[in-house]
Amino acid sequence: MTNGLAGLDYFAITIYLIMMAGIGGILGLFVKNVKEYFAGGNAVPWHLGAISNYMTMVSTFVFVAHAGVAYKDGLVAIVILWSAVPAALLGTAFLSHRWRRAGLVTPVEYLEQRYSSAVRQITSWGGVCFRILDNMVRLYALGIFISGTLGCSMNEAIAVSGGIVIVYTMIGGLWAVVVTDAVQCAILLMITSVMVPLALSAVGGFGALTEALPHHFTWNHGPKGTFWFLFVYYAMILIKYNGNWAFIQRFYSTQDEKEARKMGLMSAVLFFICPVIFLLPPIAAAVLVPDLVNPEEAYVSICKRLLPPGAMGLMIAAMLSATMSTLSAEYNVTAGVLTRDIYRRLFRPNAENREQMIVARLMTVALGTLIICGATQVSRFGGAFEVNKTLMGLIGVPLVIPLLCGILWRRPKPWGAVAAIVAGIAAGLLFQKCPALCWETATFCQMLVCLGVLFISVPGESRDEAYRQRVTAFFKRLATPVSESEGVQVSTPNGHRAIMLLFTIAIGLSGLLFVGISLTNITLYSGQLTFGAGTICCIIAAILGWKIRKN
Image (cartoon, rainbow, N blue to C red; front, side, top):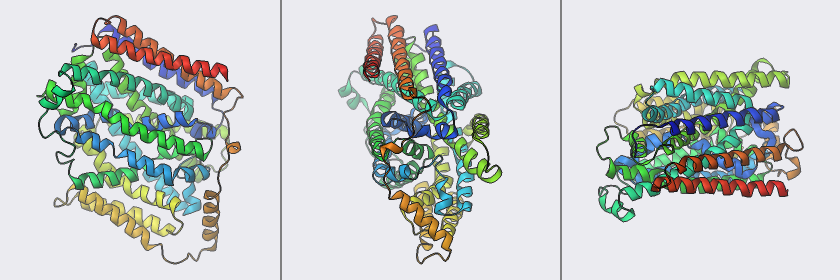
């Protein structure tokens, strides 16, 4: 409908940014200690935790890199994104109760009791470095989308969006992350759901789309659709997802293990449904705009073609939502590791709560600034998808395997964990440089090296009596269920109610924004769809408000 942005678009983006910053500022009032800043006081409701967990795993990367795969190869892009479904289900079945019972404030602090201080520090430092690099890729993907729609430079887009995430995450901690994630999820799902019927209508309906698509747009086409690639990619996502610090954080921030399981199951449902909504438009773009030079611009192009003034601003807000939610979660959990597992453990073991809170916020700012600077350089290394895939295989897998095996199995020993990390990274460097090996073969071999080296340490008992006692105590705690009474509530008696009320108001305001934007284009099909999305948001807010008042 339009190729440029109107005043309504900028109005929608401005209102969205003000709302996110406001939520962070208000929720900062409820954060009184480090446990609330990094673990939500173990009082995060399972449904908000599930939405936040889902949003943590979704970023503009989906609408850039995966949309590019959908534009080139079709339905296989959906199959790739579905890799998170079995990962979430298996994590829920075998890990959710363990993470909750571990009683953590950061996801790596248990490694000292389970293995040793060396394993904890190696995982902390290595994990921080990996997350900085990984989030540079996410912010770069957001920069592609925003610069392509707003017409600003890539660096300006990266700096502004990254700076806003720093502000509200620094102030509000995990509660700000969770509540803004839920609001952002509503905005993202509503506007992307509008795009599906718009794209189908533009090509003449679903039947016309299936007839017009190239014959190779199947579930298994292209280099990313082969059985070997998908097998290795699914295995890598299984490891990556369940070792993701933010995912672990969502488990131990719930009130009890029953809520942790419900959180994981709801996450799996979202991972199954949403890829279809997100990737149908770029598949349709292969028919509507078949001559794109850069396939990663497929989603941007079809949005600019179909959305009316105002709605494009909402779409940009949705893309901001997708990546800002991921970055805010990563900033929070990584700052937690820097504060608790590195600063407090190595330098200030007796640090008071106030000192830790100051350090936590400074770490958040430092992380965000470093990621902004690095995101401007990602394009030099082959684009978003390739950089993400290479980073995960090279660094992520070796760091995560000892983390997961340590909480599942008591037999691997500290030296085996250290050796697995070192051998895994060395193998990754070697295999990635070998031109005879494709990515999937190199990654699979690296996984085998990590697991093989770790398993060498399994036979026999450790001679260190203190170590054996620590491990026995740790697994005894993992075998003891957490009761609801052990959940710690937020600081004020009405804190939880106030947080839910803030979330409800934000959803209602989002709905009103959708409705207001749609009125200027109500005669258009796109305007009517936007009006419907806004109405649904308002109805949800009304129901939530009624329940809060009733309780």
